[in-house]
Length: 116
Image (cartoon, rainbow, N blue to C red; front, side, top):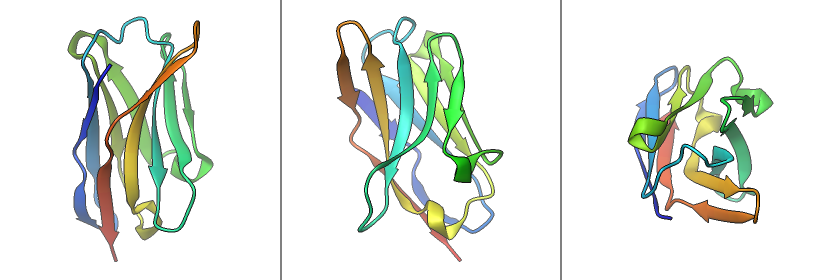
């Protein structure tokens, strides 16, 4: 499975971006899809996930600002990011997990830079 992430860029504090992650196969039966991020000098952290049934989970610091969604017809997962802060600056990676058997795939990353 190949994951193509896009939508990153430079935005001012308080602005918005929407990231997209297009999969090379159907995602309808994929257990979990999500977004992670890695800021310079920091470990990669989980930002948001969405399950096959639509349940979502968010990093505390992005709750109420970020929204993850999936469009199974387009094999795409989105991350809508609003009210961006400087601390959201990072490379964002999309992730796909199949639980049984466990298989995990990563996209190539897209850079988000929030300027103050």
